[in-house]
Length: 263
Ligand code: ADP
Ligand code: MG
Image (tube, rainbow, N blue to C red):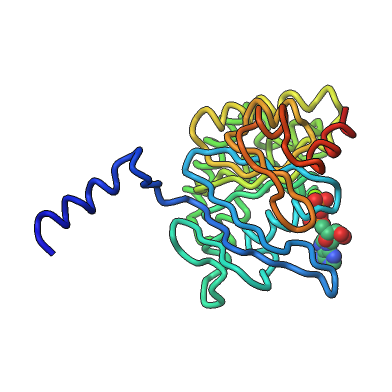
């Protein structure tokens, strides 16, 4: 193995010669059943750093299950999930540590009603991840500022609008400076007039380079943020590609039918 071989290896890594960057997140052959119900049959997905991948598909197609498998809230039956090149489905992996590297936001915000906004955001860093309280508070103020709610630190969730509560939930998901955000239908529970502020926030995060995997029924939003749209059907990603292709000119009949029903 001399200089020539080293040169060949080096050129093989140049863009345009088939070399691809290591994915931030990589799913290979992920399978998940609940009892006899096979939800994810064989899902593979590569998410590059800074990319936004949008999952679409009918209700019950497994979008939430897929996000929960990535976040280790579900144990996969088969296949591998890698974060930063590490197999996080390895049973020896510390789930809390892995989750500290991802933020997850749910449709229903899941804020603790008896805690202030600030306490909601600092709870997991302090209790689960061992972040010193002063540092957690400092970070909480930073993320609240980022989501435009610096003045709501001491409010209770009930005092906030749905859109504000969801922005708090997004702030909470960002407090550990995660490598990626997982967002599960984060606008579905909101009154229509409150959807925009949450979508604007996510659009801003995406422009700042936050890596995101999300699912949504807002096709206009999907089109504006997605680097890649994945249509989930029958336990597999049936069709994937740039938003304008998958949403604008779907190739698969099932994708066409799904999209035409949304019109
Ligand atoms: P989507 O988010 O695309 O609507 P889900 O991932 O929530 O779909 O659900 C996919 C399927 O898996 C549904 O049929 C749902 O009922 C089922 N499912 C999800 N979670 C569970 C669970 N914990 N136990 C049993 N079935 C589940
Ligand atoms: Mg769901």
